Length: 123
Image (cartoon, rainbow, N blue to C red; front, side):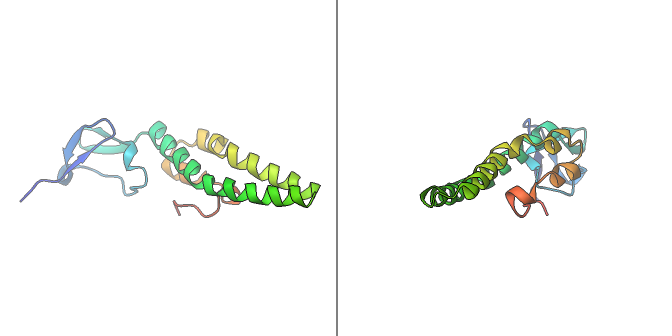
């Protein structure tokens, strides 16, 4: 029977049958090995989370560019202002204080701003 290994973010590996593994695999790229216990490195998890925010916001920014151009063509000042505010919120999303202040994976997952980014991939 072949042995299955788990490799952490630093390349350390352990026999999976002897490891205590986190139940949440969303941040597997942030796993850190200490003996036979695997935990999440919060700094690495936050980097993964911010990358996901950037991935999701790309198409949202593109769509908002279309909204802004239509408002520009219609000379609709209110729509332009709203679009500019929405784009600013999207650009600022990776720097949210809830991400910075998260000290657990649960709090990090809760930092997903559904009002700006839509449904959370971590729900």
